[in-house]
Length: 395
Image (tube, rainbow, N blue to C red; front, side, top):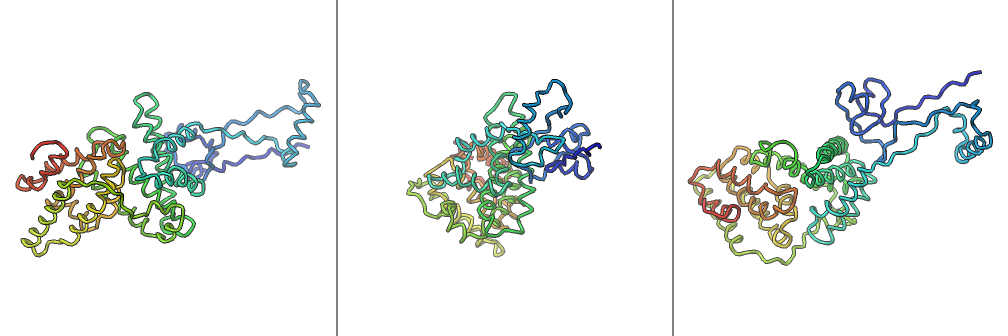
């Protein structure tokens, strides 16, 4: 009597193969079927961190004269040790494949990438260790870590592996965003730490990807920064949930408002004071001018100054100011209203100060030059401080 051959299901196959109801070989980032058909290959991200291989050991002929009976009995006993049903299976369980690229990305995170998000030693420990631990429970966060680390490696490489790291960064980012978006309406006590930290990763990735993906014409600009700000509004919404819970957790340092003791140059304080005076003048000239939310943006910038001058290359000012922006200011910026551009020019000074951070790099200078191009020359005196600090010359 012939025994029916078992069928091995593809449990972690891509969505395209599942839709077509065909077996997926589960190769990442593109499975064999999708590569052959030139289809878009998208994984749900629910598979294991170490993906199973697609090669299986060849079935041994039970009647092969060359097989040693004693050795066969020994191997059978080993298989029976944990699960007796395995002796009846026609196919052996595939050996897991070590994804060495993933290990390299984790090492990159531990040694380097996590530091760009830290503003002091306490927050550095959270990003280095606790975020990884949380990522083991929430796969979208782990995908976010791998995506940013891959993008970091791509920014450092000028060899033939750069394209590979870029491809991995985009693949992990797409998977992470899909999984993250599915949980946005279901934030509870099990996932707020992962949701908050992933949102911060997404902001950093948005800045860095503009620098590393695409050509010169797709690089940092006033328009692309406005797009990043709109994305950052989503970060604000996520960070506004379950903050009391996070403050009682091992992620508490990330929400600490304790300001470092830093020396802030007088010309910086004077520049922000003059900016507020400009708001008052605009309010006097236009009764419909929305001064309150402009004042809020300047106050937010002033509050972040100690972090900026304590750790100039940190993401604190870049991300902290962006996620606090009001919808009204963003609408004015989208419309390129002169006063909104003047405020943004001051922010560019702090981006420029953080240019050694690989995620920020040339953002400050390039956006400022874009602002100056859009502003009527009559507004140029109001961005003179920014010009002196960014390009070292009067406007």
